[in-house]
Amino acid sequence: MRSSTRSLRSGGVLALLGLLLLGLPQPARAETADAEVQARAHFAEGNMAYDVGDFSNALKSFTEAYRLKPLPGFLFNMAQCHRQLGQYSRAAFFYRRYLALAPDEDSAPDARELVAEMETRAREQESRRLERERAERDRAVQQARAQAAKAEAEAAARRRAEREAEQQSLSVRTTEALSQPMPQGMTQHGAVSKPWTRKWWVWAGAGAAAALVTTGVIMATQGPDARSTSLGTVGRPR
Image (cartoon, rainbow, N blue to C red; front, side, top):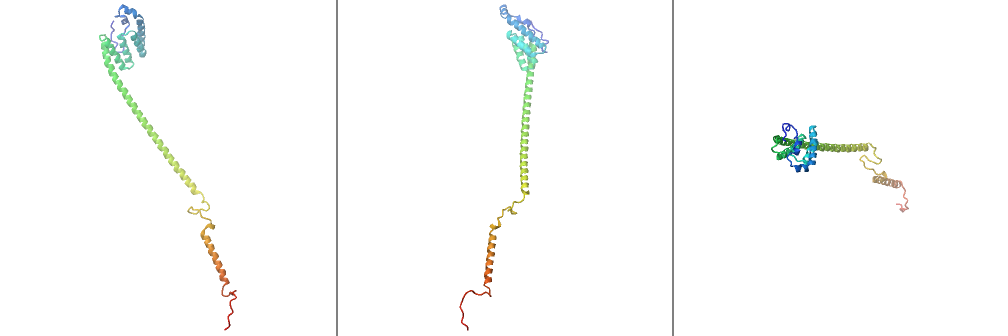
């Protein structure tokens, strides 16, 4: 049984129910009857899932069917599922595997065209992926630079605020110190003056005054009219 490929190029799958029992000798059919039944069931499930656009479950069913009954048509159907899922590199792989096992099937020309198409799409997809990664890296670098610049600006603002606060505090302390009255005993230049009783010139002046007083007393007692208290000698009259 050969399936028409008119709809395969647009995304259809191969109908394999009739192929499940073809080309097998009678003993082999007897030995694999259970596997064939299961393969038929998985194929039916995969075909139904594919028809409703559930390509992930269709792929699982066709894969399980191929494991039970390795017919090349299942590989083509698996490739179609990968194609519908946008997994172009995987789709190309399964189309090539199908062609390797069934190069003369009616669907082979479509498979060859699909291989070329999937390889082109895979390259474009990879290029877009790399471009997205570069764009993401560039955005990450720009964000990191912006965050670093913001952090530096914030740190500079904090340092500036700390310096201004320091200067303001110093200015306030200076203003308060200048506004307070000068403590007792402070001179104009800020030096503490000694008590007057401890100044040398006070005592020197007091000593000089005392000496003057003593001299005055002596002079007063020994003036011209003063009488000597000495007995002296009586001179002979001339």
